[in-house]
Amino acid sequence: MKSLFEGIAYLFEEILFLPFEALRAMELQNWTLANALNWIFMLIAAAAMVYWVLQLKKFNDSGEERKDVTSHSYL
Image (cartoon, rainbow, N blue to C red; front, side):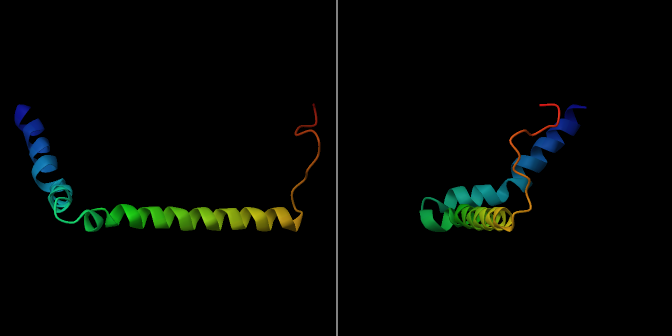
């Protein structure tokens, strides 16, 4: 059983975390290049947020939503 957990530890530490180790080593030479993936994710999130807000505005402007004072009939 101990060898199973050691195998899992080896898989994660030596194989699957290898790209993160490369990024950590690259950060000492070039901070911008090492953090390019973070900037890409932030741009994708910003584009998704802009799209979402535009869709909400389009839905609000179309007048499809019921804007009654009460949200449920029993209120």
